[in-house]
Image (cartoon, rainbow, N blue to C red; front, top):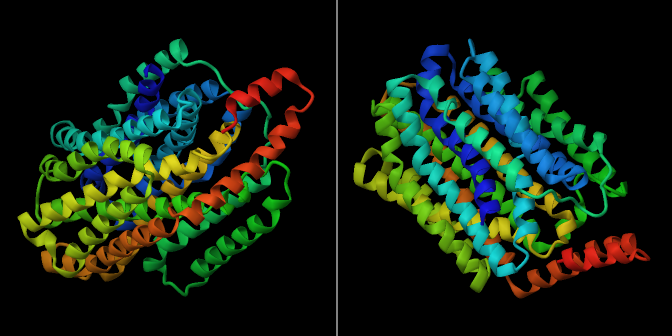
Length: 484
């Protein structure tokens, strides 16, 4: 439980940073004289680097030691936070956010791998993952309120100071109490695969964010879209030929794993777009202070905080199907209220939409994480958890990029309520579509046939482990304890 608490501290500073930053966006935009696209980059530069490096961090931790990589991530994330608080310009802030992201990439998937190897019983692991999800709810509750209070009283730079004491405390506790662990068979680095992932995600995000300003059919946007497509094709051809690929495509033969990956993209795209639109509306249109805007999100965050551990217990006792169906239905209903009925224009209806979204998001995290790591050999827990974490970050990156681009393209009157509501309506329809995707894929990926594909995939993945330890009694004993 102490190890779980230490790992949750790393999740808290990463999640708290993201939610507090959303509340600070209008203040940052005014001081740094940034556009909507500039605000998108303060979020997406972080999530983009994070998504690009998560799988590398997971496989590196499995190879050289999870404790070492986790501590290095805490150092870099804390240093990046300090630099962000001193950023003199938007460009410097974006660069320092990237430093944060390099450290963040070493935290969440490695922490989840540590948890997976600490809680070996499936029921205990599901409950631990529920606690892990509750920390996201706590950060969603505390982030906007703490961030809003700091922005109004001290300034937006102070939101990065919160990470410093928590990061240092987590570093000292990790050094003292977290045991070292690694996979018994080291995975070789895959530099070409890593470059292809960076090219794919970077080019795609750049094309989406900059397209409203430069034109969807401009030569520059078409070039970056082409680079993204070529990188994806190269990954699909190159990765299966490697003995130790950066992305083990065999994972995706498991329908629950593939479903969890797509659900993570959809759910976190909805979250990224929801927070982005909500923050700008409450402060720029309704004229609320940063603190009042943060307080408005408390109903949503409270529901996430309450439901996350309950969802973990439900996954442990009944499986992921019910939480996924609840998540998809609630998120779709929330998006529909905002898209078709302009729920944000009425206080009661806006809070009802917030609570529904919290109900959906609070239910979805535990089944995503549990499905990603359960059924896979724990020798590859870092990689499997990193794929799930990467899917989350890709989803949040695309959510902010796509919905922000739609908003920028349709906003004829940035300062007026009616103009913003009309321009944001397509974004809320996208949120609705993401919720429906979670509902449909959750139903398809949690049945008996889907579970049978997961069992077959786990058997195939375990075969190389068995071959690697054959003839080595000590390794055989270790493999027997760590195979799923």
